[in-house]
Amino acid sequence: MELQTAFDHFNFNVLNLERSLAFYKEALNFTECRRRTADDGSYIIVFLSAPLHAGFTLELTWLRDRIDPYNLGECEYHLAVRVANDYDEVRRFHREMGCLCYENPVMGIYFIADPDGYWIEVLPLKKNA
Image 1 (cartoon, rainbow, N blue to C red):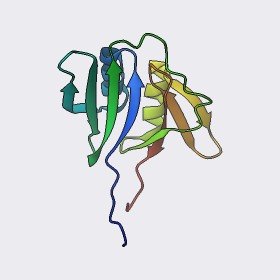
Image 2 (image 1 turned 90 degrees about the vertical axis):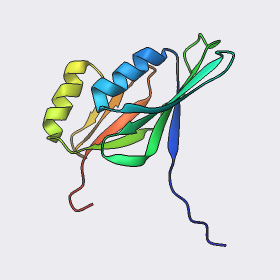
Image 3 (image 1 turned 30 degrees about the horizontal axis):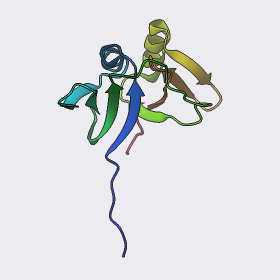
Image 4 (image 1 turned 60 degrees about the vertical axis):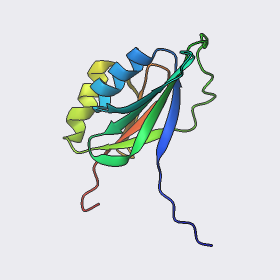
């Protein structure tokens, strides 16, 4: 059998849901598209969508009883997004926000970190993609 698959979502667990929602709105213009809350209030899961990509979402999971920061290990993974705006202008914006955490000028890429330390690679929109 040849499976037919598509990416659906990626998850980040967060300590402060409102802070994370504000960060993703300001830094990447991600908006909430759906939410699931436990009947007992033990968790809230919020799915965010990007303006230029329907279907794939970022899932933010908040757990009421979690108080310690998540151990992200060596952060050898990341989410990548593409921006249609002027790339240098977006990089300046992220630098001014204070979330730009790594630049690789040789490769022409950079990364931002969210409030919980997750890295997001920011790339220019591909031409003729």
